[in-house]
Image (cartoon, rainbow, N blue to C red; front, side):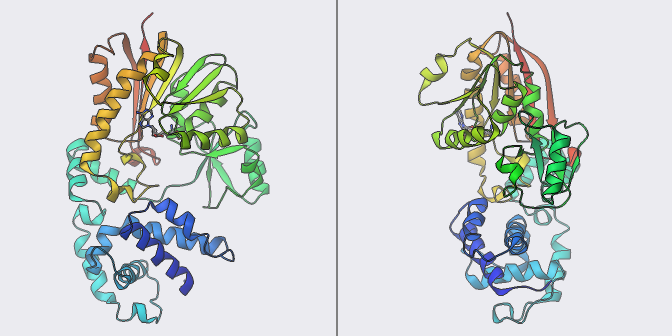
Length: 404
Ligand SMILES: C[S@@+](CC[C@H](N)C(=O)[O-])C[C@H]1O[C@@H](n2cnc3c(N)ncnc32)[C@H](O)[C@@H]1O
């Protein structure tokens, strides 16, 4: 691989913003890719993937490179040098990379790879937490799986098209996909490509959505014509899926505490041809009270640590803090207690997270069922998805039913 100076400089700029300014990796990459309109798909792929790679392996690389915060440009170049050596890429004779100690890098890598927290590039506290939650051998496998680059999975928007037809249209646009057994609307890209520029995407024929996430809406067992509340809808990945499952019939209420996210959802809903959805910002408790005992189905896709989706957000390994985890568990308990009241007698409730920690998942559900707010509910089923077992994101979902 021949390295182009301007692309590598873009990677260094991106790393500076992520590591030193605390900006989110996805936002930074979006911004950096706007630098130069002449960059083609390959150049953009190089910048995005190299940046993500170095973010993913930050702890390991900084240990090897003996770099430290705040990272000066020479230190960021040292991290890049480590990336090159470990990938077997010839170091170019640029002054920024002069004297890259190739043998030492390989030696340090072999040594550090024996220790899980370095090999998997995670903070000490997270390594301890994962081991306590899942046990040593499962955690070792899980964190290794969560450090793999996520594949691109699409969900056919069945309001507009069936999966097989979509597959053919995508192929006409040069995007080859395969179906996934057990995921009825999913297509997996055979090769990573930018799908957002395709006509099929602009026409709303699919959304990008991980395979595990595609299991959540069907778990709620919605029927066309029902009143369904998606109480933590965000930008609506699952809301759009729910609308498709409802065949655009009935009432779908998407809520969030952030109006900005719901605005994004509205744009996506328009593209998807969703007509049965309305959005409501949760500004106060009245918004929820108005719907007490009114919904056939309620989805609580709760805010969480996001430990199941590290593959696509590798910087969360550094952003996440133990205090946040404690705080978010409190929010999850409140959401279960307060929002479950929207379910009508005989209705159903799904609590879901993209976490792999029992303390955010089954333990929250057990706590809710044992509480006063939960005594009218019975537990129906749950599914815990680990990345090491499914090959997709880590997820949890539990279905509960309210007595009549
Ligand atoms: C896991 S994300 C939702 C992802 C979304 N359902 C999807 O499929 O794309 C959790 C969402 O909960 C929202 N949230 C956080 N605290 C909340 C609260 N107290 N009530 C409702 N929503 C909340 C966040 O803004 C975030 O959008």
